[in-house]
Image (tube, rainbow, N blue to C red):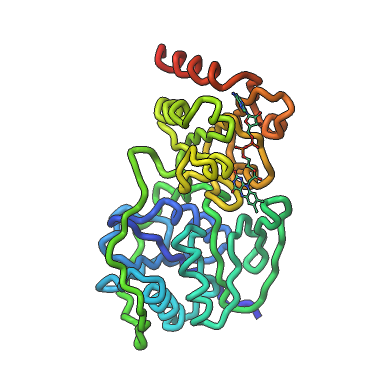
Length: 317
Ligand code: FAD
């Protein structure tokens, strides 16, 4: 029997703020059609302007920033809820991927990860086989634990007259996790550019950039457009780009408004990471490059001529 629908969404917190992927997961939470509460594990990340949730739950003190400790708090929030939550949602970010299985183990539940669409309160879809097929899953085992693929959902926009949520304090778990891991320091690889997974523009270089010697041209293009830099696995493997720039099945999934693939052939494993981009531009000197076939705009040209010309046009604006 379907219990009353009630969703607990867990916010990802970083640097004293809630990570934007959380607001995309909130869109998925609303698609389920239940009332939504938000669990914010770091009280210092709370902001006054949070809307679109009925209630905010937060501990009086943040739990240790380790996966087991945070999972213990989330499982406790689920166990202590009265009435019970029917759904638990985390964003399918690196953080969410670490936490959700640990929560599932504590609750004895099977998580459904990387959800990209909601049909109803117990029917969900997710990509499989590197994004080449969509699997539809139905479950009636409550609670339903889900991770929301950020690229698949737009950030939630609350109505102008949405009331502020109430705030309740979450008591610590009676059995805190005995976590042997201690986080000593957290140093994200981050520069001036936007985060790849959240950028509106991604300029992505492939192995073809070897003809230009390095990634300088791609970095200049990204900076001129206020975007992030991505790379194919081949470009990473050949030392042209750092590992955390990799886009694709085994890299980052991106969903920018504009993706520009330069010297990128368009292998299936790369396409798996960019197929949610709203506009795809391909620059390649091979007219038969597979990326050309899926691109909205294709430029069959040597990148060593194309990028400087584009940069000159941008500079002249
Ligand atoms: P290439 O295929 O070598 O293409 C280079 C392109 O540059 C060519 O199309 C060429 O025409 C063009 N070019 C060359 N010189 C110029 C020039 N002067 N001007 C214009 N164009 C030029 N790949 C990923 O990207 N991400 C992943 O996450 C990923 N995961 C993988 C997982 C598995 C299990 C496997 C098996 C593979 C994975 N790959 C992944 C690798 C993938 O299969 C491809 O090998 C890779 O994406 C190819 O990268 P590329 O397009 O840069 O290189």
